Length: 423
Ligand code: PLP
Image (cartoon, rainbow, N blue to C red; front, side, top):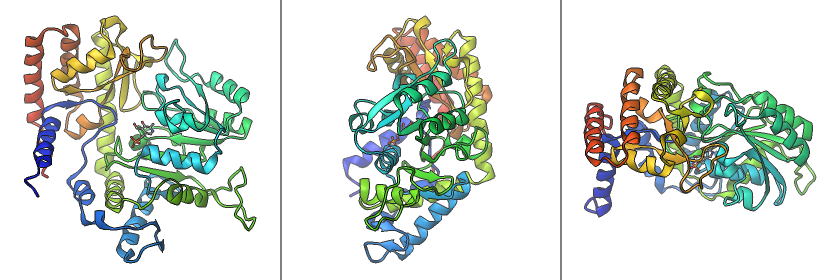
């Protein structure tokens, strides 16, 4: 079994992860404990349903594990209800849509090119295919959310669901402004905090829970856990659209959400992943994690400053979180080309649309950098200047293979001195 070619490929991927500088803002490195739980015998178990209400026998241990995951997530985010079963962030959002909307209803999210996510209404995603999507955006001048425009769009389009949250926005959100807009039009307000959830959990960024009806997050970005999603409620509230049971009783939103996850959009929960989520939340509750996430922010701000000193244009002029979006126009290189040449130097990042981009999503004029993963590798502010220098040297001279190879060796020796995995 261990002779399977797949294990050789896993070894190769592990080596790739270890030798490079990982700047993909949505990635991180999990602990050995998270990895063990995710690869445990729990993968063998079917457990449709919820703790205490399963459709399969033999779920006594599973129930304890899932309940622990729920309780720890509640404590971490100050939530009153958590569903830990969504297999991913997209699955969590799909379940919220199913719970709150009917096909054809209007949703409003941040424009994808302005930092939004596919599941916030993109025409190639379920959220834009089955629902009518409208968008708010960021200001051209300062790259920050146009809150007035958002309110106007809400009043004009009357969405039933408003989503705040982003994949490539480096500033904090003013959730009170979204609450105002939602109240104005009677919409449900959802925050998707997939990216900054670790910073929010530790009080470094504003807390959406008091303002938003529903909060979703992935567990594998700044939270540094296994891949997955969760759905949370700050307080249980009656579905404003009055979903009724056949007996005419109004269902609580928590019940509607539970049904939307299972059986609405998923079958059996991944209990090995739920166990790994429980470990992730336990780790995030620790003081060590607070120090980690604070360092993520310090590194992000140091990297952004060092890049600005090298004449890189950061959208909005800096960052409040773990990521930054770079406009490459003044560097005469596309996002696609930049991603490729940085990759040749073992610096991994992703091309990204920038607001008001004049290039297609396949080419793009930007790249996105994040510091969650390199901080786990132990890098500090003083290393960020060096990384900015590597990036600058590659971008400045993208066809100089000899120079790129020299930088690659420097990248590899920097990262080889930072061992990480015991597993
Ligand atoms: N929501 C946001 C804001 C995201 O950035 C992402 C992932 O990049 C998702 C949802 C989807 O998460 P997943 O890839 O786990 O489906």
